[in-house]
Length: 130
Image (tube, rainbow, N blue to C red; front, side, top):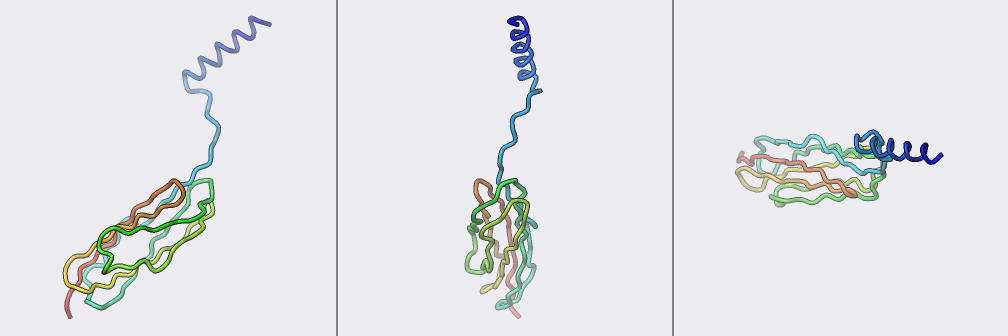
């Protein structure tokens, strides 16, 4: 019996060293956003086009709340909708509105955070006069 136990221990150590024994599956929260970049192109000052960002939880665990942080030109872009609770394997839509108040190139980056996962989206546009 002792010889059988030693053989089992040696086999288990050998299999572990080779990576044969798989770790148990664990819960994950993973966001994916698309498109990752959107260009509104040339937009007349005062117009208000919008884009939609699809946010997916491709992990196997629910995300209690999805936050959207913005970095860049907050004066010319607005996040019009949010996701909130995002169950596993589901998606939601975030609406971004571009309202140029001045001429020139404008850009903003959305940092979409949910649980331990983060996705990034960049939006840009160029304000022009009529």
